[in-house]
Amino acid sequence: MIGNSRLHWALFVDKTLNSTWDTEHLSTYDMQELAKTNTLPLSPSSTCPIFLSSNLPITLVLASVVPTQTKLWQTYPNVRLITLNHIPIKGMYPTLGIDRALALYGAGQTYGFPVLVIDVGTALTFTGVDHQQRLIGGAILPGLSLQFNSLARNTGQLPLLKTNLITPLPPRFAMNTKEAIKSGVIYTLLAGTKDFIESWLSLFPDSKIAITGGDSNLLKDYLHNYDPEIATKLIAENNLIFLGMEKILFGND
Image (cartoon, rainbow, N blue to C red; front, top):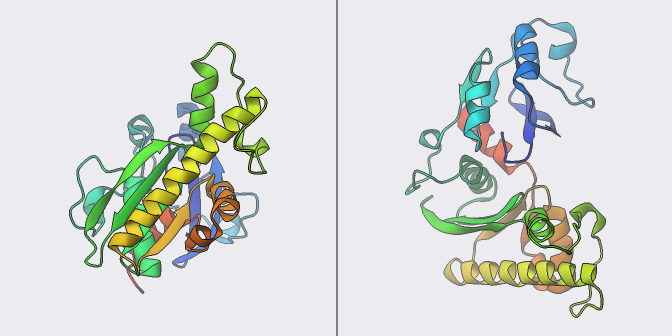
């Protein structure tokens, strides 16, 4: 899965998810070098014997939200591109992100329909589908890192904060600039997330709610402190996109 910030990899062996990992976007040169030997930048923790003792060609299944990277990787040997046309969700609009659609389908096939997916990545997205697998819609806003980066980049004196350095829930009314940034971004995001969840449950009271993405654990931890009842409704699963790919490739076998 080619995301806005990184490449997200999953290795399937005999239709079973073996391992997942992330890398930076690769340069044209790096990709061409890998293509020469039909190899991939594998996870160091992968124990798959195919790559250690076999010359079998790798089948690369690709989905992407970055057109330039899509074009680059389509030159790779044995590549299969997944598009919206492959995803059996009704009523999808043409510009719906393939990452949102795959995560939604993966969640629905895993936990049942209806389902709401909250993806906490570069962008924070809410996407819902009903009992009949029809898209209800959703929303997109800047994720945690993007909000922090935007404040630092577009102001004269505000500092850049990193999400990996932000662990405790900050005081709501801060007494210094860094804590004020944390408070403004995090509490607004939490209030918005709670509102979307409650609105969705008013429409589909029996719906499952899945949360995924690079900052999903951080957001869920914050929600546990902010509103424990809301937090207990969330199912954390960082492989929703790959679960969606799995169902498209292998069906329900």
